[in-house]
Structure formats: structure tokens, C-alpha cells
Length: 477
Image (cartoon, rainbow, N blue to C red):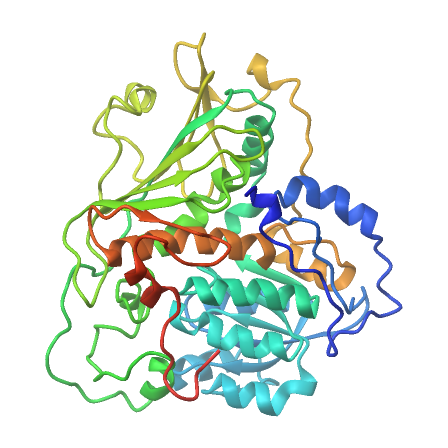
């Protein structure tokens, strides 16, 4: 099945977001943009059921306002959002952000916030640990709220599928927080690859310097007093309850824990795999295998891993294999020899995306795809991917350039023009990435076949337990 045939959900006007008279952006114009910006959007193109208009006030509620949530809430305000509510499980963090938005109502429970503030909210930002992304966002989406959610979009494949469907059913303006989507370099690389400059894509290698937080560890024994400012019950949320331990979970250290995060793969691949996922029209893999890890346990992801994804023929492209490496592991010198020649064996960038084609290779040496280097068969070395390279001069600009990542979300709310990383594409990317997390949990060296449309493995029934999590009562999606 081709990737373009997989997503068949038709956009249906939702009761909370009926078509308004301001919805003037014609479908034909959207189709022209979507054909290059959303290669897996199928027959339905993103649009907004209720366009708010250039002069209408957009009331925004922010869930999670520390760390990245702090900058997300500030960005929403800078772009014209009226911050009407703030929610954070840590009272100190909440009160600190309230100084910036004294008019906002304060909550430590987003369920209560959405129930009480429903009629006063147009849009919601979700900047929590991974395990809260879907429980918070889905509640808001069912109320017809436009959503900006940090990456990875969800913690499970089931949640990603649900959010993609809700986006279409409710006709919502959505955007996942993988900021590299707005980079000109990322969009140019997609154009260059899809123009056939490096020929037929054959292999993809992506590596990351993550994790930079604890992984490969067991759960500590004992219990510490919960800080007076922290609502531990709300922080745990949908996950099974466990004792509070100071400096172990709350803060930046939650990413490696199976109950709360998605490890190095879930954290970074939404950035580093974003460009090749689009450019290579990857869709769903049909095989995933965790080839090697530093050691997996029942509590955390491993310190290092190497995972292989296999993709079938799609849209005239040949089968392709994609390897993911993290925790300091990288492709061998033989695979990325041009990179080694340019940077030296001891100075290879800590993260990178390397695409091997039948006519050449492309290398992006950063997390966000902001720049890329290219080496064709006749080149002696990697060269900058700009118009000084003769082979790139005739490649047309086909993807609109971005006014800014967060700006795209506000533009979508106001005009209906699709954000580049709206949930129809972002959820698809997230599903594919999370399959690597499942492969690690299924076991090292186990070849897991995958039926993407039906979210199941024909040969590894044990994978089913990791497709959808069990939710603690009160936090179901």
C-alpha cells in the first residue's frame, strides 16, 4: 500500500468548529500547497473549520509553563495570543510565569482548567513531559481547541493515530514543536532530493548525541518527601503511581523512563528524521529491528541503541533501509566516509542525517536540518548545498518558505493555511519513530514485521502491549 493511500480520514465539520463565513481560503489553493508540503496527506487537506481572522483575539491556555513551556507561552503572547490560563504541576513555576501574565487564571490540573475555562479558550499549548501530551491535547481537541504540542507528539502509536483523526474530524489548527520544520535548509533539502539530484534513495543513517539524561538505570528504592510546591499526583498523571524521589524524575530527568518519556529516539528523531521522512516519502516501515543496545531493562531506555527500519517500494522509489544510532554510536567509517574525510574521525558531528542515493549523498550536520552538504559521483568531497553547486541551480523552489515555526500555527488559526508540521504529518512521523521504541521493548535481534494501517505486528504479538498504554483512572484518552 502506498503511503498516500493510508490516510483516508475525510475532514468533517465538527460541532465545536462549524465553518464560518471567514473561511474564505479555497480548497484548490490548499491542495497546491499540500501537494508539496504534506506528501502523505492523502485525499484530504488540512483546513480550519473556524478561521479566527486577522483582528480577532485568540485566547490561549498554556499547559506546562516551565522550561520549553516557558518559551512556548511567551511566544504565543508575542504573536498576539491573549494568555487567559496557565497550568503547571509545580506551584513555584506557575507563580513565576504568572508574573508575566497576571491576568491569567492559574491551575495545577489541566482537566479542571479545560472544564472551567472551556468557553473562554480558543487554543492550547501543551509543553509537558511526553506522557501528558495526549491526555492533555486530546481533552482540548475534543472541545474544539486549536493545539500546539511539543515533540514527540505522543508517547504511544495509539495516541498519535487518535490525534491525527481528531485533527481532521474537528478541523483544527495544529502544529508540533519541531522547530527545524521552519528552516529554509530543511525545505531546500527536500526539494533537492525530490528533484532526483542524488538519484534513487537507498539508505538513510541518522545519529544523535542523546541521551544527555539518565538512561539504562533501574528504579531507585525508597521515597523522599514531596516538595510543598509540587502536585505529585498530577505530575504522575496517566502513569502508574510511584514514590517521589528527589532529582530522579521531576525536572529534566524524566525522558529516559519508560513510564514518562520516549528516550533518545523519541526525543530527537522528530527533529533529525523530519527532513528525510518527508523527502524520501517514507510512510510506514514494514520491518523494524533493534539490532543492538547497551542493555534494556523494565524501567528505562538503554544508554545506546542501533535500530533498523525497512521501508517498501513507495511512489516509484526503491525499498530503503534506515538505521538510527544514539548514545555515542555512529555509522562506520565505510558508510559515512565523505563525512570522516571532511571533519576527521574524531570530530564527526554528534548528530547527523546521511542519505545515500544512486547518484550521490546528502549530509545534514545538525539536529534541525538547517543546512546540508552534498557529494555527487563526480565531486571530490562534500560541498555546501547552495546554488553555487551546479547541480542545484535548476532545482525549483516548490515548498513555501516559513515566516517562523510558531507563526505558522497562528497563521493557520487566522487564515486556514496549513502549518508545515500540523498533526496530519506530525502524527505520521511520530508513529513511525515510536516503532523504534517498541522494537527496543520487544527485544534485541527480533525482526518485527509491521502492519501500519492496523497498528499491529503479524509476527510479534507481544508488540501489542506497547502500542497503547494503560491509563490511570481519570487520565484516559
